[in-house]
Each structure stands twice: as structure tokens, then as C-alpha cells.
Amino acid sequence: MEKMLSKDRLQGFFLNMTRQCFGELGIRDAEVTGYVADVLTEFARSDRLFRVRARRHQRLESVVEMLADEQSVLPDGNPAFAGENMLMRERRFRKYLGDYTLFMSGVFRSHVEHGGYLDYYIREGSRSYMKVSEVDLSLYRTGFLLYQELSEKFEYFSGALDYMHKAYFADSPKKDPFSGFLKQIEGWMKVNVTEN
Image 1 (cartoon, rainbow, N blue to C red):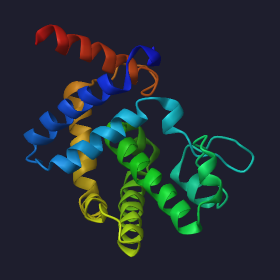
Image 2 (tube, rainbow, N blue to C red):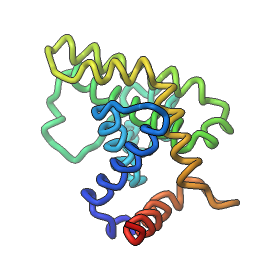
Image 3 (spheres, rainbow, N blue to C red):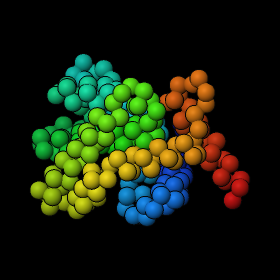
Image 4 (cartoon, rainbow, N blue to C red):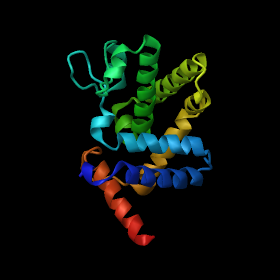
């Protein structure tokens, strides 16, 4: 199923959907909506959502596990990351953590609320994006303002994703909330294509 949707087509779908939903909530920042669409595109595939691994190569699925295991890594299959410095490794990890908590607290908010860790995800997501902003600023990298805004308005953007999920991607009753996400997206894309 996942191979049926090209990344470009999925990206276009999420960009249009994010612009529409965020626009309905008064969020018209093109850089933010583009970034959030990128996160949705990236995490629409479960293998990209659960990328953090412990030293023993087991998949880490909670923020607490990821932060507790100091040796956790993001295996991207790119040997260039083997020699990256600690600051860049921390940045990459914190960016992933910010993206992960934004996605989970937004798209799968009811799951996160049911586990009792919504506030924790919001705090850690905000903290992670601020760390990315600080690293980028210290390295004179452009884009630090985007991560600062994501940090400062994390709860608002997470809520906007929750709104998007509730308004456009209703969960099937008695189903695992993760199992059918991409299938729902594919169905929604087909409906939107035939209506246009």
C-alpha cells in the first residue's frame, strides 16, 4: 500500500490539506505549513515514524525511552552520519523528537491523551525544537527562526493537527489508530482527485 503513493503526490496532498486546515484556524505562515506537511509526509510511513533504535537495535516508541537511552540512534542508512560531531547528532535527534511529538500529539492525540502523556509530549516537543533553533543559531544556519516559532507555538500547531485529524481523517471504530492511517490518506486523495 505504501509503495502505491509517490512521495511527491503524498507531499502535495499534505501541503494542500495543511494549508486548508491551518488557514481555517488563521495560520497562514507558508514556511510553517510547508514544514508541517513535510513532517506528515515523512511520518505517513511507520518505518519513518519509529526510526529511533536502542543500542540493542530494538525500536523505541516513546519519548521517555528515547531520552532515557543516551545511546539511541537514528539509523538513516547514511554512512556520512557515522562521523558527525556531537552537536549535529544532538540537533538531528532533537529535530526528530520535535517532529515525532508534533505528529503524535497532533494526528494521534487521542492515543497520546489515553496514555496520559500529552502535556509531556508538548513540553518535550517544544524543548526539542528550541534546542534545534539554538544549535542552528550557534552555527549561523538559516532556519533557526522557524524552529523557534515551532517551539513557541508547539501546542497551537499540535492542536491544529488534531483539528485536521478530527475534521478530515476520522478513525474507524475499534481499529488500531496507526494501522489504517496511510490507507485513509490514499482514500481521501482519491476522493479529492475525483471531486476536482
